[in-house]
Length: 174
Image (cartoon, rainbow, N blue to C red; front, side):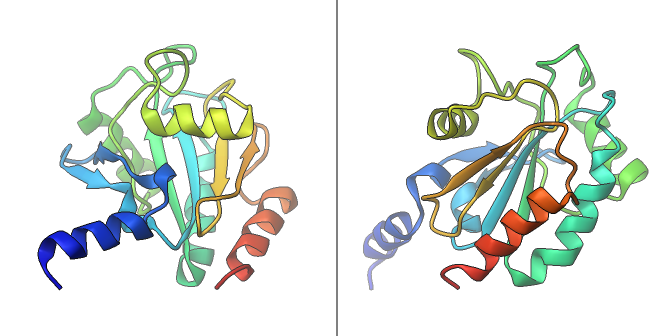
């Protein structure tokens, strides 16, 4: 297979929702979301100085619990709410690593609502009708990218509501 055909095949296998590239938090190197195609994805907008920041603990436990079954959590720091993420990407990365031992993928700080929202969050809001109202809003995306569920900030990562939805998506279309 030529490399042009291989590239076309990999783009075709990647759901449209994931066809975007975002800078990694730690070093701002571009990361294609297509690398997560075929996994159940939990997208979360995060902040370091928020009443919900302690949800990092639950998110990391969720990631450790389900990553072997095909769950990936993608964190997107945002300063959109109450100026609760004012620091640089490097400081945010240090905070996540040193305070919460975060191992799930994190991306560079970006806007998650309004005209300046990053394209992924624009699509997620369009698909669900829910725009993040605060930090730690969660979107759960099925393996094929066709089903997207929305969970507000008050829904804890390890809540029965969210874990049952994750388990159902992990079992579907394996």
